[in-house]
Length: 480
Image (cartoon, rainbow, N blue to C red; front, side, top):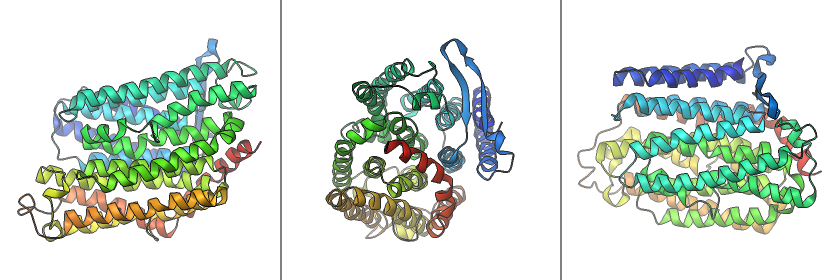
């Protein structure tokens, strides 16, 4: 029942939101619904109810062998927790923002949360595909309606990329379905599918391209910076903090265990692509004059490391990916909140038009520095453990690849410290001369994230315990 509630609460809350008249009422209702979802996730993660309540199975499309089958396992718990934390943080951070048609905006946001929950909970591949699309559809409308000046062409590009990926995945799902012993879409049936080497290689790429677009990794990343720049910042927070994890999650849950031989065969090529993307995105991030685009390229670099660690087939690397999926989401949302606070008050996101903000907004400066240092995985921050484990996995896989990938650590420090210096230090500019510190709502949201950063940096063991079983089951498949 816990798993079912995690889908039903945001679903019905989102549908109700469309009919709420007042702007403040729509905001308050959405915030309440997201907090309620978070409470249910906590109950599932910390086993406050019988573990039998963590799964649900019912007839769905019986003629096709598809069932409405969902479950809250280790990796699912972690990402559902990230999803549940992200939405109240985002709603709280943008509570004072004015959106046209607020009922529609917040309703679509909650429907996007529904789709994301379904992706992380599904144990039936057709149901997984259904929720995959359900998460993307609200994102299209949110970007095209509430985005920036170039929102239409950017959303169209986003749509084309993701539509092609989804179509390839659907073909792959049907292909594997007919190879299962019992013609079923169940997770275990897909794991037991009888595929020849050629068939496995063919189906692997159908799935991988869909997941690689969603992550995204080089060279399928070109939709991301434009989409992040043009989307409303609240939507960008979810896209980069939670939605990109769909591709990484799917690679661990569906790709590697279903196609273990193909994953091992193509691992070297994929790791090289991922490391290339890390260095490329880091170098581009250094050259950015826009906060949003810098964070976007930074995110591409971090995702590239996670993808490389998955295909290293090492236990430490895989463990690091699962921890880092959560931690990256927390850190990047914090950076987006700061970007939103600066743009809302000052009307600019350009580093060249900022400066000296530490004197005008000391609280914002302190909180950004903590989130920025977490973003470059400073020891005693949450990202350090995950990044250390991922590089350890890459080192075990290939010393030279790990060394080349390690250059991105230096580059990350360059663009992150450069951002801090250009925004907060030096002389004030025309834009920052009359700046004020952040409001209490934004301050509270950032403090919550900083607490998570510090606590998980000092004591990461709970996150590691959540994912141990998943790591072992995936690696057993990988090394068949």
